[in-house]
Image 1 (cartoon, rainbow, N blue to C red):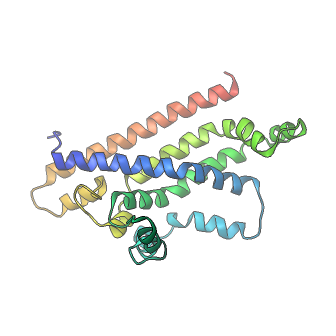
Image 2 (image 1 turned 135 degrees about the vertical axis):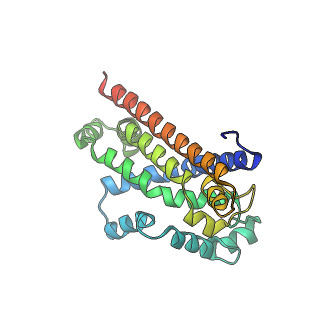
Image 3 (image 1 turned 30 degrees about the horizontal axis):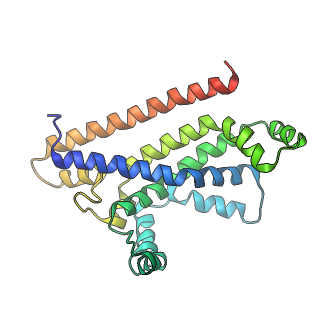
Length: 231
């Protein structure tokens, strides 16, 4: 029952590939945005914050359509990428990674932002009074103390990217071997009579991957907190 077929294995491999790329590419930007929201006040901050968290409250299909309009072959960004570099994002696994990254980004930013806001600002002020520059303070004080939040943000974003469906299927469709991730493969199986066993295998596998990711994140977060506290 739990022996995966080549198509199912390909869906798992593609989902992991898309999720890893989505999280890896968006992590530096996520840290920067989280720090900006936690430590700086500027005109339009509330609007910027709302835009960052927009994927959490609008239907994923809306995000997928906006990505298609923007990154499609005739879109503002997509046309430039194709004409300049010959790169096509829509209807490719790279596009699936972009869709997953956009949908997971708010969760990553929120976790890291909360961790930064929990840091005692007096530590950063003390470092500055001792002559440390802004970058030195960030890399020696803020970033290490944000470790547990970064771990949580990464795992939450990974889990969200792994389960992304609406924006992905709208932006890159369901192309076997190219964009058919676990959720899309599962949806396809539910539309075909007699594929209940295959669907159940993918459901169980999805739950196991998500559970392992959350369990590992908790272990890592605890180790990071113990190192920070010196325990």
